[in-house]
Image (cartoon, rainbow, N blue to C red):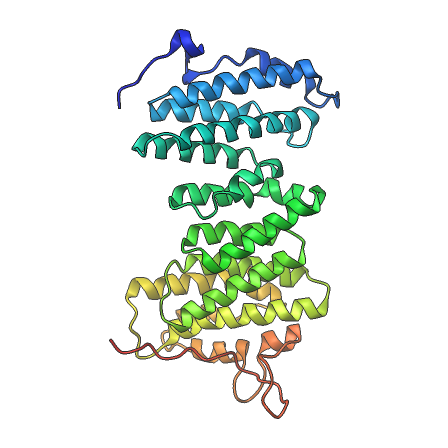
Length: 367
């Protein structure tokens, strides 16, 4: 795409790393206020506002994708590395005003590749600033038809910075974020977006965050039961997050509930792998094996307080993984190591007796 240069109009300068917006004034302000604890004055806010106005004007006028990225990276950089100091807060507050205005301007453009590219860059910029103050921008776009915009909207709402800031956010904002993330678990089709949500929920110490993980696991269980599994690596992330919470949880009731759902999902991975006859390709079986080995190595042995024999069973020519499965998850003979160690069962019979085996994976439907 041909580059249009607006050198005199928006004051762009060509630097060593590409096009950049003059930032000496805002960089000097950032360095002066960094670590000082000084309040941000109206004059300081004027400096930040001018920088954002010029930079976003340049962004909106640009037709070069590389230039868009260069300006976006500069806007991220000038926030600084101290996310909660007065300067960073003022910077993000100003960012919110200008990013919203930019989105509004772009919404009036005719549909085009350039409009799509601009929406994506504005959403990436919002996410990269990692602030709960910008979560509203992401919340408005969690159902966007463009999966790239939707992914970065999820990142804007559910990133590590927001997770750290959530406890000090106002109740309405925290509730809006957690409610929206919970809703996406049921509706989202992108595994990469679900991975963002799961990772975020694992960082947030809140009952609703744990419910989000439980719901995500239940949705994956249902997908396994219908033999519609894709992106098994999502299960690695989900099981590791859930397992880490089980290990850290001191409340026995919450620990047992999370451990049960962990076991139910992990058992589905095993059962799909062990299915015989199997409709799976070698690639699909290897993906399941990757989940089993990684979760066993990093989480399961810690949960049980002992090394399992899963890897040896996988490597043994005569097999034996099915026996290890029963030892860990339970059988008709009795409870497995996970249930015994973590104090849960898989429900009750009509007579009130504990069920010792996880739900069975139905056989695949015939074509």
